[in-house]
Length: 60
Image 1 (cartoon, helix red, strand yellow):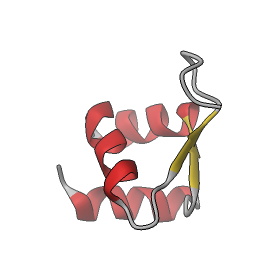
Image 2 (cartoon, rainbow, N blue to C red):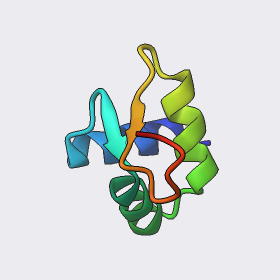
Image 3 (cartoon, rainbow, N blue to C red):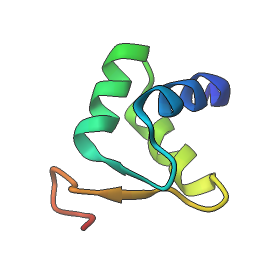
């Protein structure tokens, strides 16, 4: 997982406390980052970044 790249992408997208699935997918595509790396980063970030509007309905 490239933490610096994810941090740069989140900063560009204005993500600080929560992320929407569509944003995560866009970041993955634009920066060639695996979806699981985004999920791991969100879970390990202090404080955790909440996942909202999950396309699978897993998170609300």
